[in-house]
Amino acid sequence: MAVVQNGRVVWTGAFGTVNDSANTPLDDGTIFEAASLSKPVFAYIILRLADRGEFDLDRPLFEMLEYPRLAHDDRYKQITARMVLSHGTGLPNWGGDTLALRFNPGTAYGYSGEGFVFRQKVLERVTGRSLDELVRRELFRPLGMTRSSFVWQERFAGDAAYAKDWLWNVAPVNRYAEANAAASLLTTAATTGGSSRRC
Image 1 (tube, rainbow, N blue to C red):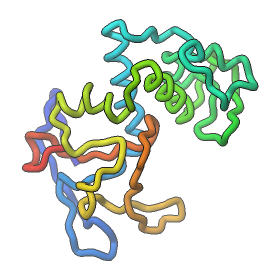
Image 2 (spheres, rainbow, N blue to C red; image 1 turned 90 degrees about the horizontal axis):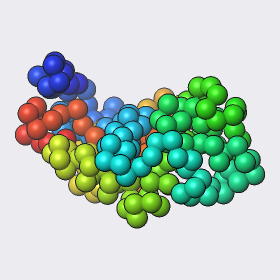
Image 3 (cartoon, rainbow, N blue to C red; image 1 turned 180 degrees about the vertical axis):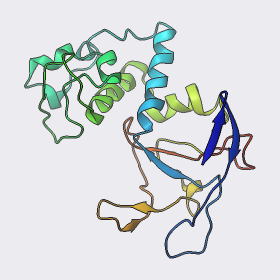
Image 4 (tube, rainbow, N blue to C red; image 1 turned 45 degrees about the vertical axis):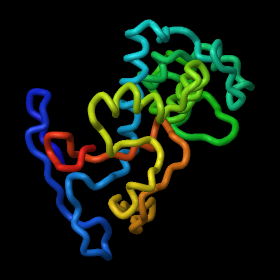
């Protein structure tokens, strides 16, 4: 847990154990899966780049990357970064090799991890850098977030909290080999001011 007041972390603490069967207590440097909190981190990166004039939020994404998973439906050519960030793409939350739009892009709201994945692929194509590399450059390094990543790092082993899977069974943290802008963030609650181990 971290308490933020007036934009500053004023307290951090941890409760519980790393997993149900161990006596290893959590601390404020323990790594957790942040799941969909990946999305606002990714959105921050996109908006930083847009502020610098490196991206137009309203340019159709297909102009930068044709997306085979949507090639069967020309409506996808209307999807922009702004629609992705506001969940207005029409894409499902998750889908298979072929994606089906649920509504015309820009006409409604529909929570979508797939939209963030599409935007990630465009970002990586245009910049020539991986998402994890971009996030480290734009956010993690400047803020001293040394214990945050969009991919698994072996230095996290033994210090990552277990979680519950879809059946409420205790399961180890996912060791993501590839970054996913919608879901793969691994991080801590602590900041440089709250723990001897930085997030």
